[in-house]
Image (cartoon, rainbow, N blue to C red; front, side, top):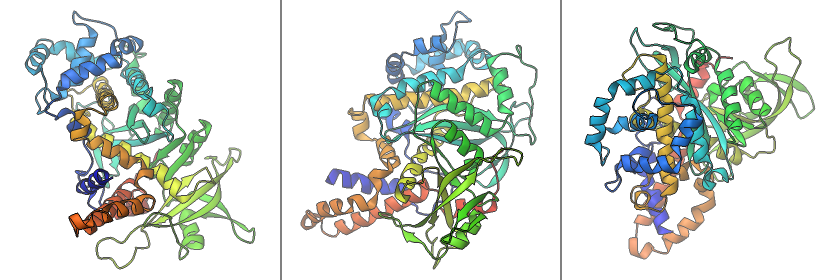
Length: 519
């Protein structure tokens, strides 16, 4: 018990920060790459070789349609592509020199591979994700959720294909770059990136330098898909994941995915949506105490039903209010009405800094189609979305996310899937060697996953147990007991603010209603 207490206290160094703005560097996120690959006893190439065998990558490459087109076996080239991000870095490699020599000698082969228009990287990504998913810790997990999110990578250059202008909700501004929509699976044990797609907006879009060699190729189809709407892309991703045998109970998304289209996509695929919603023009049918009905926007429901009537959420240092309404999922007036029962959970934010009270815009609203779900459960499920934030952070900092020195759309597609496969192989290593020294010494990932497993973090459920354990050793450690308890509570509340996006920056950004998801 004391070991667990000390681990949680240590976690305050990671999650300390309270009202964190999302446009700052998330240095407090755990680092999967650093956890596993900087251990002095781990050689990345040896570990990847083990995962390569464990996941039967040669078989998966064949299933995904990868075929040899040069004198070098395709498996060798893909293996090197997965490792290239660490060839010149601080990560320990047993055969760094020989790999470098090989990569220099085969540079043309490697560049050809990432630019191949027939390479189905998405299929390979799905196959690897499916292999990791089959681990009992993942497949048999009690709570499994699909998570949708996007991330913007700023990129400039007139010759860069597939670049357009996007709104980056982490910084609150528009920029030129590539927006990558990702679907992942979150459980209490791991986050698996299942599928990704570059989305090209209609604003300042940069086209191809030259036409595809084959307009029916994999990459040509991906380019056409990139110019459709994000809800349409998401719907296809979920279908592919389900067809691959990857199942979930929920679909999670932040406010930029809180639309009727996303809700309908979830319900059509037998998923329960748990979404953060914007304070926009969408109207809900509310039935009052005297059975009178009215069509109200979220802000109007807040004024009529919620304001001044907040209720303490059991086990959390937050106040909320549940309101059951109906929502017409039809997006066109000509469509037949499609009314569904909806539960809205309003949550009040905390004071920022020295503010004496919460501001009038410092509240958020969550939506689910399960009208039996209690407030704590809604937040518990939604907090699992945090896994995708961790993934994007890792992808950009350590896993080569859109860092290849190439300009073609084909290479960009290769990059986003190679990044996901690197992450999946590290997750597989964590699952296989959970009891090894790698995870015993510096297991930030394990702390991350315990954090994502919201139930383990509910302060009210284990405060008494921890208090009792610490009181038992008060004579030995004295006032450190009070310091530890304070640190634990601060850590947990800091996590809630991050995972549930209850920081002031995010809520004010939502209030402006910018960066709307394209329908």
